[in-house]
Length: 300
Image (cartoon, rainbow, N blue to C red; front, top):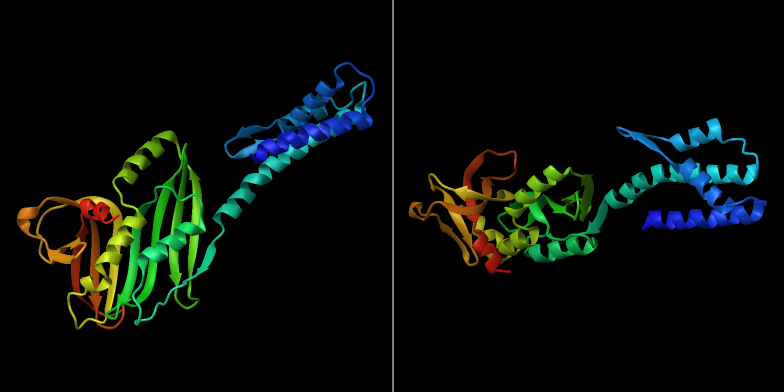
């Protein structure tokens, strides 16, 4: 859309040059367009762009016999458009990728439960292009009172074509805000194909947070004497097999131990570690939790 506007502006300026400095010459307006397009023509090699068209103009067409001033202005207009085309992508990326800082908008104290669904709605409403997101990983720390001490997660969005956007959300507890960053990448077609396959085997942040909201953080507190917990998860659906000791399945009504006869199960894995006071303390226990996709989708 932006480049279409530039083409319209280019056409308008050529019309102005034609009327201001043009003298009688057959097909002058079309010639001015040609000079302008010549000045804007670029040659790209690797990540470098050279104004090849303007160089050709300086070497062979700098001194035309008729309407010299008008044709020079048209060529310089093309050069200006070439330079503008170099500037626009970095500016667009800066506007797109600049971090957003959003107030937490909800209590993070021990007296009020953290609403994960409300949190996700706040993140999603900050942008207008989060369609079919897929969770990559999540790291969270919370206390035995249910107070969230830290939260970080990232998710990906694959748009049409070969564009991929990576979002990261981090809780800044001291500032009582979330810092949200996003980066946009261009992928090759075969990379997009593999990425889409990987994304198909992942759940969305909305689905993950809804399960956590339904279950409640207290469901992951196996040892009531523990004061500090960390939860790590990834959005990929994995196959659960092997020894199910200290392994639990997350359901909409809480958690239950995994029975060996139920294996294998395809599910999303979470690891919960218990600490006595802080993350620097010795780990007291390590439990693994799994969320089955059918459970995820049943609470939507």
